[in-house]
Structures are given as C-alpha cells and as structure tokens.
Amino acid sequence: MIRYFQFNSVILTSKCLNFRITRLRISIYAFFVMFFAISCNEIVLKPVPLTNNQDQIAGLKSMTMRIYRPHPRIILTDSVLNSLKMHALTDPLLHRYVDEVIYQADNTYLKLPILQYVLSGSDGLLATSKNALECMLNLSLAYRWTNDQKYALKAKSQLIAICNFTNWNPVHFLDTGTMSSAVAIGYDWLYNWLDQPTRALIENALLNKGINAYLTEYAKNKWWLSSNTNWNMTCNGGVLIGALSIANIYREESEVIIQKTVENLPVGIASFGPDGAWLEGTNYWKTAANQTAFCIEALKTSIGTDFGLSNIVGLSNAGNFPMYTIGPNSYPLNYDDTRTILLKDAYPRPSLLWLGKQFNNPDFINLEHRFLQNTPAEIRDVMFYSQPQEAMDNRKLDKYFDGEVPVAVFRSEWDNNQSLFVGVKGGSNGIYQGHLDLGSFELEALGIRWAYDLGADNYDLPGYFNNEVGGKRWSYYRLNSHSHNVPMINNKDQLVTGEAIVIAHLENVAEPFIRFDLTSAYTNDADLVTREIKIIKNRKAVQITEKLFLKTQADVYWGMTTPASIQILANGKAILTKDGKTLYATIVSPLGANFYAESAEQVAPQALNTGFSRLMVKVKFSPGGYTLRISLSMLP
Image: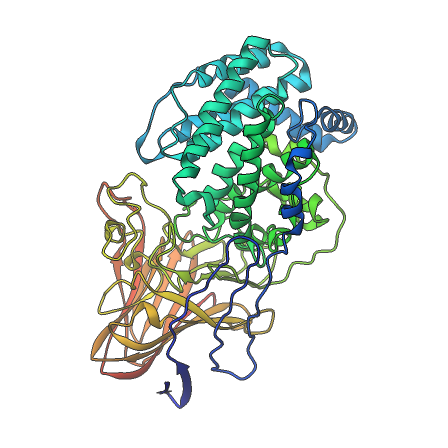
C-alpha cells in the first residue's frame, strides 16, 4: 500500500513499514535499511558483512594443541614490560604516564582498605570488583616497575581477602567477570613472587568462583552470554582472562571456557559494526572497547592467536566514535543511560592506543594523547602505550554512524571551543538501557551546551530496568519523552515499540542533514512523522523540521531541555542566555505559533535536574499534514 501526503507543496511518498534492524549474532552480520525517497539524490545504506570467522572456527577446533606461555603472559609480558622500561628512559611522555600510575598506586591503592564482601543495590558486588581490578593492575605494575615489595604485599593481602569471599556474586555476573579478571591479573603478574599456598588459593578461587560459576550460568543460557552490550565483553571476557591465567593448572576446564567465551564474544564485538559506533553511547563505549582490547591482546600474548576476533567488521573503526561524538568543550554526545551529564569527558580511553597500533591508525593514538594533556594517565595507557604519531588530520566536519543506534554528528570546525556541534540519535526505544528519545539531539555553540540529554537516573529506582510496554522505567522523567528533545503528540510519550528509520543523510556539504521516519513511535495519533536535523547559515545554525500527518485533531508539542535562561519574545521568537552567550530560537513554521518555558526540575527520589528548563512549543492542528520547523542560531 502506498500513501501520499501533501506538505506545503512537497509530495512525500511512504510505504507502510513494519521494519526492524536485525543482527545475526554469530558468524555473518548483515542488515537492510528500507530506503524511502524524499529527495532524488540522497544516500542509500548498504549491507556490510561481519567476518567469515574462519580463523575462529579453525582455531577453536585445534584448542587442545595450544601451548600456554610462561607467566606473566596476560598482555604485560616480561618482554613487553622491559621494552617499556627501556623506552621510558628516552620518552618523557611515557615516563610521565608511568609516574602518574605509580602515584595512583601510592596514594590510592596502597591506602585502600582490605576489600569486603558488601552488596550494594542493583550493582551488587560490582563496585568492589572494579576496585579489585584497578588495585591489581596498579599495584602489580608498580611492583614490577620498581621492585618495591610494598606493592606486591598489599596486592597479596587483597587477593587473599577476595579469594576467601563466599562467591563473586554470579547472580549479577558483571561482578564475577570483573573479579575474575582482577584476580587473574594479580595472579599472573605477581606469579613469580607469590608463594605456593597463595597461588593454590587463587587457582582454586578462579576455578570455583569464576570458571564453574560461568558454566553454571551457561547451562541456564543467561541473556548476557550472547548479548550485544558491554555485558558480553565484561562477563565472557573476564572469565576468559581468568581461564588463560590458570590454563596450565586446570587445562581441561580452562579450554572449555576459552572455547565458549570466544564463541560468544563476536556477538558483542559486532556491535561496533559497521563503522565503530556503540549502541549504548559514549560512556559504555569505553567499557566495551577496553574489554575488547583486553580480551584480544590477552589471547595473543597467552596462546598466540585471537581466533579472528580482531577481524570483526567495525572494530577497526571504533576509535572514530569518541573522536566525533565528543564536542568542542570535551562534553560527550549523551543518549540512553549515559552517565556523563554535566561532566567534561576528557578522561582516558586507552583502548584508543591499542586500536591505533592494532589497525595502524595514528589518529586514534593521537586522540588519546590529546585526552591526556589535561588529565592523568591510567594503567592501560602504559600497557598499550604508543608514542604520538606524525599524521595528516583526516577528520571530517560531519560523521554518520550506521550501527544499531544510528548517530549523526555535525560541527562547524575542529579545535575551536566556540564552534557549533550537533549530535542526533536514532535506534529503537525498547533496547537495553534505551530511553523514549528517537530523533533526540544535543546542541553546543559558543562554548555552551544549549540542548541537553539529561542522561541516566539512579539504577536503584524501583523498576528502573523494566522496559516493557507499560514498564515502570517509563514513568521516570529522564527516561521518558518529556525530558528529551523530541516532538510529542497530545503530550504523550513516544511508543516503547517505536523505531527511528533513517530515510536519508548527507555529510560534509554546505547544509548537511539527517532525516528519520519516526512514525512507529506515534502510530496512535499519526499516519506519518518525520524529523530532519539540518545545519544551515554557513554552519551557524541548526534547523529542526517535523512533518506530520495527523489522524485526528491533536496538540503537537516540541521541546528542548536547556540549562540556559529563557526569554520569550513575540512572533515566535525566544532568546536563550548562559554565561554571557546568546542563542536565538525562531519558529519558522507555522506562523503565529509561540514559545513558552517550563521547568525540567523533579523531586526525589528521581534526579532533581536543578537549573534545567524546557523551551517548548504547543500547536493545535486539525487532521491532515503539517510542518513544524524551528531554527536555533548563533546569529540574531
């Protein structure tokens, strides 16, 4: 069935769509996007293969032939460490990074109390597991770099305490995966220093609280085993690291783990495909990328192969995501359960160093060193160290990421904190950690983030992860449509089942844009809803255009969350001010409509959102087709 809609002399043709992006999760990945034409010269998306995975299949079949290298064998082997030590003698940057890591060992991890088995809300033992991992990494490196036994002694005390825990909380397997990795690092890196009784205690704990716990959950076919989220790499990868560390002692059990985890890891790694984006946003990109780098490098240094995991499509481009989605003032593009609201995002992403070396991309290496100009290095920056490279700047002004959650970013120039930056996201509302925010955007200009996504709320709120239709999750302001920069019809949230289908996108031209079909998020009230975000006025303004074909008379709302002060003017205009800077808002269409303002602040136990407001438009339309167009400009 074909439908035709008239919008101010523009004819739009649309097929009824019952479409869902599908990801085949083991060996071959392809997806198809229905192209729906509004303009005759716009880009069509094409299928991209994952990998033939032959290296993985052949390698797993010959698992029993593997020879496990001597300890330490997980990433920071003695030869790698000795090379870094020699390099640090003549490389002041590496010397600085090592000093910063040892400073952390002295001032944080030597002083850290002995870890206790304490469960906390929905995160369970995760905070303890993360502390354990950083503790083992930093103290073990500090010992191996300086030969000062105080670091090894403290690490040993922590290891004994952890290994005497009743369990590593396998009901929340992130805890177990992270703890397995932590204990494995301490065991492997300190192996030649540890006494035999302590080694035996650790080996037994890794077997029973890591490997056997994994096999118990594996038998239950737990969702995270083949998840396309960061859980995949953390759970599978953490136990993989544990198995690699004790494979000489418990060979049969460890090889079962290696086989099962290496079969599951491609599902998670494939989420970087086809071009490096991460469906859970910039915050979880760091977790997923760090874990991926850790797993692949550990396999290579321990048994000489990564079973083809590094060949998975998208991984070689993963460094592009933080490169493009961090704005001119180091604030990331926020969406879904990102937790970086109001925080500058210039913290280390050491997987960029690994990605740069693995795929011979100096831009990624240089990006991490830029992040480290104003913040201390972390242990992984030393582990994966590569000095800054001389390279041409290959960055474009605009970038489209065609993953499970499509993202487009546009900017007016690089390396100028006053430049314009706009990011837009698509995807599906019902995905894990998703919000009701299809088509939402963030805008930065003149050094101010004007349009905000407020990010995650408290994970311990009742029903926070109940994302079914009618689920408690959607009652929380930060997660439903009322806080996001999206249109609403009759002041209702987008539908949980809704998806944003990319109709067209065009980058690196005078007026780049992205256009979504959002109809499936509004089917109760509209036969068609599209949203276009376009950069105009010589990249000094953004224009947001909604085209709607309403079933019945309806109030259409347009909203944007902002930390700025809002001054409402006549004739469809408003002025936003913050820190002495000004942004100009105009309702281009329909004529006669006006802005108004409302508060975004909430009451406990939800996040308060103090200081945030909403720039709003409300227009009553009769049944039929309409256009709502807003301009946000750096110029009057």
